[in-house]
Length: 75
Length: 562
Image 1: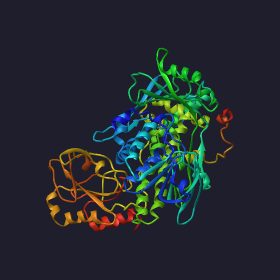
Image 2: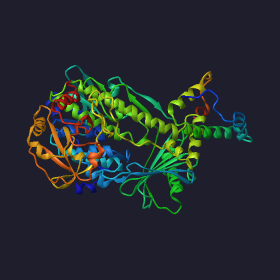
Image 3: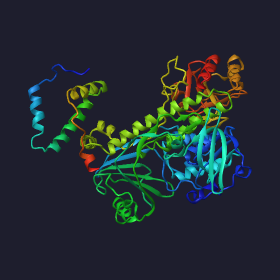
Image 4: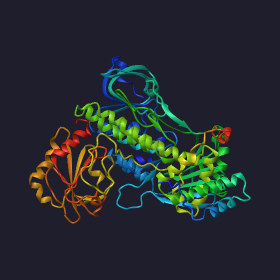
């Protein structure tokens, strides 16, 4: 069951730490940091149903604006 | 077979022989024609022929595989080859392996063992050049007088109606006609039969190219599967190293989509890449190279009337899970026993529909695993590449991330859980050998000699009955077990006795001793436990106690007669 009600022990501290962790990073480096963070947190959650619910919630309201053409352009 | 080990199967050519139909001018009728003498066609033909069916195998060439091609043959495939009577020379000649390592840049990040327990006849894999596998299958085929192979006989036209198939076959001396009951299309990824019947194999092609370099050398790498992401000797790409027999090593270099497939195959391009991996001082000889792309695809249905598609003609995967040839051989054995029962009028034609449904399910599983591996090795977007690299970086010191690293999920047989041929469990079992699963091996004693559980089963239906007390087989239970052997589809009974029971005899039954208790453990079997096993060594029903009526009902279901 995906928790949508408050569950963070120190919300403002968490948010600051998250933003702070990206300080001085390029967009590419931030992308890597985010990816590692997602993987670590996913392992912490563990339950596939919860993870799928979180993925769906995160995706909500984002209309596809076109596929990532970065690699295809190379190809 | 020891004499055959010296044969260079790759360079053998087989004599073209003028077909009798060319002389007579009239079409003969055959029960089974198999097209394609690769591993899948040969395995299907042998399986049918050794069970008494007359088979004609056509091949448009006069040679076996050129180049090593498929090299990884999985445990389940070896067990099938054992049943076909040619597993032993392959295992003797091949390089057995269970272990692998994954490297990121210069560091080893992950090791795995695909068969961490004892008590199995065959290893998780052997690596053996495809031409040897085909060579040993060919040797086996020569022992079967009812299996005829015609080289340089090319299928040129096909049509079918409800009653039979008509074929036109081209030879160097002209064309002749044939008729047959069933046709097996084992004619490969570019299947003529598939095209001729208007079918397609659909899926996705990946935008990446890979170079295979087979080199002969004396090296002290262990017989393991080594996979590198972004190694210093081949930056930003992946590399796979594998040992084959005759001191030949398979090296697989990821090149990227932009690579020129013709130029990259030339020795002046290949040799520096190999040298970079092995070191400047190393001495080696390049024996084969090839640049390939791959697709994950399949036909919508593997059966079209009297034509059955098996192996690459029906489905294709990337090479990273060794799921191509292995799944094709598993197609072959799924098909052979069903075709035999239908040809012998012991089972209805609809049994062949389950060849399609079971192997289409298996193909989907293989394609899913293969696609996931390919998405990891060849990410299709920047964000996919970022997650892949993040996973690899975390894998250095995080166990969970090692599980996500996907350098190929190696071939395992499908568990056909949803097959209509299964009788659903009514008793509780703790073992993984649910209806639909292939059975697992275990060491045994038979007639006081070391033996294996798998070798007691297969080719026909087998009832595996666990019992602590063989003396009661004089009574009703013994009679019931023996009676199974005389039905129109006979069931062979194997009684598994516990360790220490000593040799036991009961006419009409095979009695074995579970020397290490592993059979009972792996089947979660207490006294009375009874498994009905298909000719392809998959479980189709199991019970906690023997009931002849239930066995008969399960047999009828497993042969589509119910």
